[in-house]
Length: 238
Image (tube, rainbow, N blue to C red):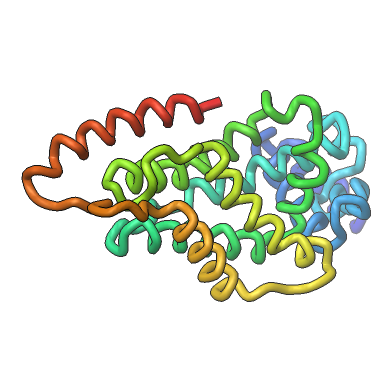
């Protein structure tokens, strides 16, 4: 009787739609990644949790790395789908702080996935042509929009090197959280967001006289500034 039930269960599993089978494997793989890390994430354990044999995992994903790239893509998609635009009510400084804080919380919530992306995916020669690279660009584009708005309004210095400013922000976040990602320390997300946004904002803000000019006379200058910012933004697309 037990053997009959087992065969019946196996038949039901074999009839699962491909999308469902893939989803089960990816969910199991993400659990194993968070618990064991990429180096120790055994495909056999992924198969066990997904209710399939190990060969089935390799039927859907050619290598262990391919499996975890797919996990990272699914994770990134959830992050992007759940992102709301940063509020502009507090100006550029508040918006920068909000995005930086959000990034810190994302790292805290999924350290194993973030570590896999940083250590296994980004160094790969094909990274800049990958789906994960495109998703990363989408994620960091909000910082670009905030900086562009700040330059156009006069709150930030006009001729910012956009790419370097963006990389400085995210590089600072990565550096601050690196010990945590390596299981060698921790960080305070609130304090880190305050410190990084303070340093970045004060380094980028417009300190010239009349930086935030108001009134009707400032409109032509704002239009001209916006045109110059758009030109700079085009240079940062690469």
